[in-house]
Structure formats: structure tokens, C-alpha cells
Image (cartoon, rainbow, N blue to C red):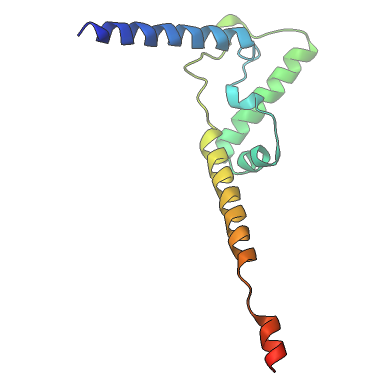
Length: 126
């Protein structure tokens, strides 16, 4: 029983660090969510393309608002900052699907290269 409070205390401690890092990163001040700041490689671009319209529109609104604030060298009022609990990873399921599909295609390509249809052997026999 004595170990339960220690686990709970360490969980609260990690949660506190997580909240501190989220705030220290600074992307909550212009209203970004974590997934708004991911580097857009080909996989991320495909995941963004697959977003439902409402999530895509929300993302574009946050990005445009942040660009406007940056041009005016302002930040949102503190009550409008995104909270760490709100920093849900809306892009993550779509990104995981894109990565899984890419790996599947790569594995399929490896397997396909290993098989020869035997066409050249048939030509020699004919």
C-alpha cells in the first residue's frame, strides 16, 4: 500500500513537468495545439490531407490566427491560450495510418521483388 502514493506522487510530478514543458514551449500563447507545429514531411502532409473537414478548418484557423498575431507581434490573452489537456493529438491517428500504409507498401515491394513470374523461363522453353 505504501507504494501506491509514491506512484501517484510520481504521476503528479510527471504531469507537472509535462504542463511546465507545454507552457515553456510557447506555442500555446498564439493558440497552437501540439500537432499544429509538427514538421510537414510527406507523411504528415498526407495525414493532414486525410483530416475531416472540421479538424482541417480548425487547424487552418489556428495557423492563420497565429500568423496574424506574429505579424502584429502579439499573443492571445492568457484565458485563450491552449491548455496542455486540450493539446490532444488530433493528427496522430491519421499519421499512424499513413505510416502503417507506407510500411505495408515497402514490405509488399520487398516480397514482390523476391518473386519472379518466370516469364523469361517460359520464353526460353517456347
